[in-house]
Length: 312
Image (cartoon, rainbow, N blue to C red; front, top):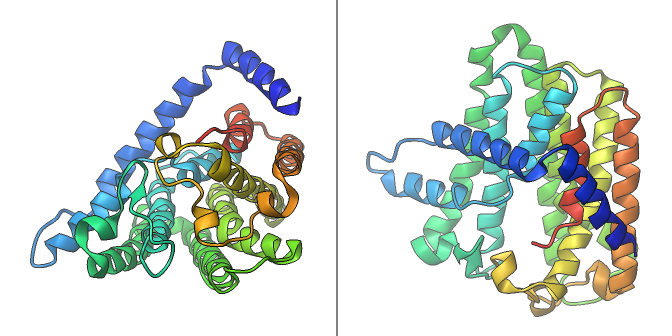
C-alpha cells in the first residue's frame, strides 16, 4: 500500500516538476565533467588509461556526484570548485565496483549491462584500473586548490571527508567485514554495520563534501551526514530487494548474486515485506529531516525518494 501511495506522489511531482528531464540534465553535466577530468590515453601506460575510461564511462545512475552537487547547491554553492570533487567521488565509487567484480570478490562478468573491466582487460589490469581510479580521484580533487586557493580550508576538509568515508573507517572497512562474514547467517547488528560502512559511508561523504565546500556549518554538515546515513541504508536494503525481485536485463548485472555468494541480506533476515517497510521508513525520516534544515531543494528531496523506490 505504501508503495502505491508513492506512485501517486510521483505523478503529482511530475506535474509540478519534470523530474526525469531535470535528472537527465544533471547526468549530462556530470558525464561532461567526468570526460574532462579523465587523462588522455597516451604513452607506455596508455592501456591503463583506456581501462579507467572503460570503467568510469560505463554509464550508471551517477548518484553520488549528483547528491554532492545538490547538497552544494542546497547550501548556496555556486562556483566550479565542486567539479573536481564531482569527478573524484564517481572515480572512487567506480574503483570499488571494479574491485568488487574481480574473481577474488564477487566474480561478476557483467556490470551496467556490459562486460566487467577484468573480463575485458584481464584480472591484472582490472586490479590496476581500480587502483588507478582511486589514486586519480584524489589527484583530481586536489586541483580544486588551483581553482580557489582562498578556500583551501574548505577544500582540505572536503578531502579529509572523502578519504575517511572511502577508507578503513568507511567503505573499505564495510567491505572487509562483508567479505569475512560471507557464508553464514549474520545477526542484524552486524548487517547494519556492514551496510552503514559499505554503502552509506560514500553517500554520507558525498553530501558532506558538497555541504562543506558550500560553507555549511559543522552542525549542518553533521545533519547531512545523518540524513545520508539513513538514505544509504535504505538504498542498500532496496538493492537486496531488487536482487530477488528484478531481472538481469533491468539491473544490468546478475540477480541472485547474494544467494550465489551466500550473503545474509535484509530480505533473508527479515523477509521481503518487512524490508520494504524499513526502506520506506528510513527514507521518509531522511526527507523530513532534510526539509527541516531551513533551506529547500525540491529536486534533492525527490531524488532521495527515487533512489529507494527504484526498480533498477
